[in-house]
Length: 169
Image (tube, rainbow, N blue to C red; front, side):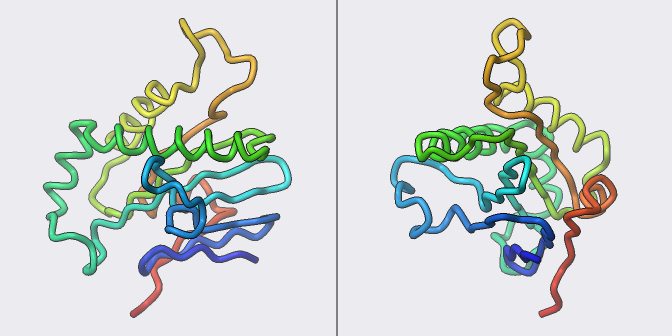
């Protein structure tokens, strides 16, 4: 069992071959020129690239929930996610990994995000990565097999095999 920790959130992954923190200074060494997802997890049949945002964390920047939701709804956050994924994929691909389907999972631990907001961000992220190739033709080798944007409740409902919880301080 592998437990990924980001702030006071933890994600439990039972069948990981390898799981590593990817966005710190020691993991990829190219933070001066490449963005990085928080975690890269290798499973027997796929990779998970996981990005975690926790606006409800008291240690997070002083942006209110409403301000975060406004940036979320406007799509400003999509650009950051897009580059984090693409740079991480390029890094892993150039390192000889990314040899299995890759799924990009974004966890935004903000209870007030609705299912419709999450679905809209998922669709926009699929378009920006892009999930489909040129003109909606499939890629010969997909850049990303799938993605999802979740709050804690929707993550646990849709991905019960990778439960998320808050650790108590």
